[in-house]
Amino acid sequence: MSNDILVLVEHRDGVVAESAHELLGRARQLAGSSGGEAVAVVFGSGIDALAGQLGAASRVLTVDDPSLAQPTPAAYQAALVAILRERQPLLALVPNSGIGMDVAAGASAATGLPLAAYATAVEVDGGAPRVTCRIYGGKIDATVRFRDGRGIATVVTGAFPAAAGQVAGSPPVERVALPAADSRVRFVALHRPEAGDVDITREAILVSVGRGIGEQENLEIVGELAGALGGAVSSSRPIVDSGWLPRTRQVGKSGLRVKPKLYLALGISGAPEHLEGMRDAELIVAVNTDPRAPIFGVAHYGATVDLLDLVPALTRRLAG
Amino acid sequence: MELAVLLKQVPDLAEELEIDASGTDLEREWMTLVTNEFDDYALEEALQLRDEAGGSVTCLALDTGSADELLATCLAKGADRAIKVGSFERQPDSHTAARAFATALGRVPHDLVLTGVQAIDDLDGQVGPLVAAELDLPHVSVVTHIAIGPGGRAATVNQEYAGGVVAELEVDLPAVLGVQTSRVTPRYAPVSRVRQLMKTAEMGHVEAPTDGGSGLVVEAMALPQTGAGAEMLGGGADAVADRLVAILRERGLLKA
Ligand SMILES: Cc1cc2nc3c(=O)[nH]c(=O)nc-3n(C[C@H](O)[C@H](O)[C@H](O)COP(=O)(O)OP(=O)(O)OC[C@H]3O[C@@H](n4cnc5c(N)ncnc54)[C@H](O)[C@@H]3O)c2cc1C
Ligand SMILES: Nc1ncnc2c1ncn2[C@@H]1O[C@H](COP(=O)(O)O)[C@@H](O)[C@H]1O
Image 1: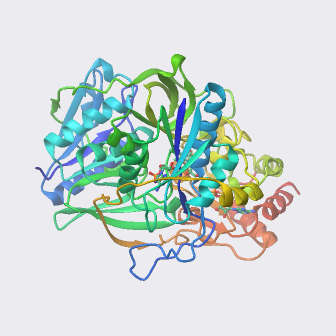
Image 2 (image 1 turned 45 degrees about the vertical axis):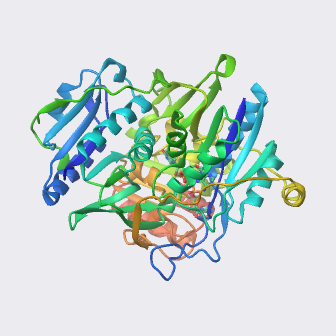
Image 3 (image 1 turned 180 degrees about the horizontal axis):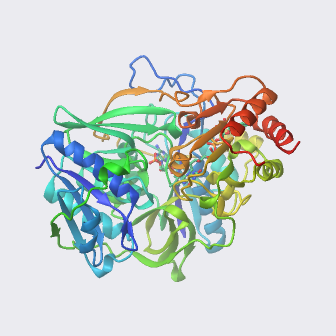
């Protein structure tokens, strides 16, 4: 057993994900209080050079194999389980990404280590981790401990500042053998989004709509408001899933990360998956009839009026 | 193609959530429950896949005393069978639920087990990967675009990543998939039909272990300090619009 804090590092096209910096920055601080090391865990093919981007770690464990060149949840899980069994860390931090969610729960089942999901805060207190989980769509915080003092946490993107993990240096790399991988899930192809529509990551003003808009027809008045403000319309995921707007307009975890000068959130509850994509906007104004909507937790200004009343009222003032 | 769908009810987020006297759980007495949104997508996908490939759809829910309406809704939408699993006072943690489902699935033929990608109430991770581990089946979560391959031996699915990037994966069947969204908007079941089926439909029941546990100790639950960040603008729509225009003008965010 060790007092190490493990971090599962995601990367694509030779660049480590922002989540890796966020998690490693925190792991480094936690390792200070646990008396262990911050250990980065990387899966892929030809990845030794990534260590140069992981200066916040004390060491880097890699499972390096051509079969891991592309994201493969089953193989990642097998590799993570092998490392957890062998290293017995105090805590493993996994990004709450598509693949992270998948791999962490499977690893929990395989190792018997408990899993705390949706972590937004992690401490080491009295030698054991304490994790705050943001659940119920962001409406409740639960503070939990692991029964035997060790466990896995999936961490929401943006929970910790990335800056703390952007440390120069190239920690030593240790290769771990590829465990017998589960070949029942196979990678076929990676599809990247098509360009062509408005690029919402470049717009200074976004008028963003959520399910509170009610009906597709109401998008018209939202478009008029965006026009009057000189911005573009973006949205939460359900609007895109309904086919009311193209996927290119989706803000959040499985959509795009935006940082406009103004983000006007209309009828968006502020689920963690949405906040991931917009919490860094310079000015956030939220309009939601539910005074307890989590979006107000990240907004600078808020109002609990009906968006269908506010939108035309605002457009009139801007156009007139 | 034998399809099994796991469904659950969760608190309605449109209502106010309150913490109980212990300070470590929600006040559940008056809570309104709704079907977990993603489970509706999982069921719709299952119905679509059955209609394409033949076979049947079996819906499973833990028996928490309120599963009848949920399962009757599944039947009203066209599921072939409904089965209540175990006997629980309330929704257990994911690890316990997964053990119970793994036991039940031992008695229900399945080429494909579909779950919702997640439920809003899980503290200890997703049931899908946990069930898969219990049954030693492959698992993929955050899935869209399920297509069954020739002979029903494998399926191709899309797994979504950040930035709209999608991995196309092939998975051997039987498998467990966590459904993010269905190819079409989930169908609607008329309330009258659901009510009728609640009285007349035959639902199966499978015994299952109710022990297990998440291995987590909840120290406290609390409402996050939402609203702490936002300065709330009072008044009606006109008053709010006036203030917003002033705020935007002050920050130089208005055209001309
Ligand atoms: C793996 C995964 C990835 C995901 N990725 C994303 C993502 O990239 N982006 C994303 O957005 N979501 C994503 N989600 C979904 C996310 O969990 C939420 O379901 C989603 O963000 C909710 O969207 P919403 O706020 O529009 O809808 P809801 O949560 O239904 O909120 C609607 C809000 O509108 C308010 N409202 C209703 N009527 C009015 C009115 N007339 N005026 C004003 N307010 C009103 C309500 O009070 C409510 O707060 C993802 C989920 C998963 C599991
Ligand atoms: N108690 C339960 N009863 C039925 N299905 C469940 C239960 N818990 C989880 N599931 C299924 O697993 C999915 C993921 O839920 P969760 O693991 O709670 O995030 C849900 O969308 C359901 O499909």
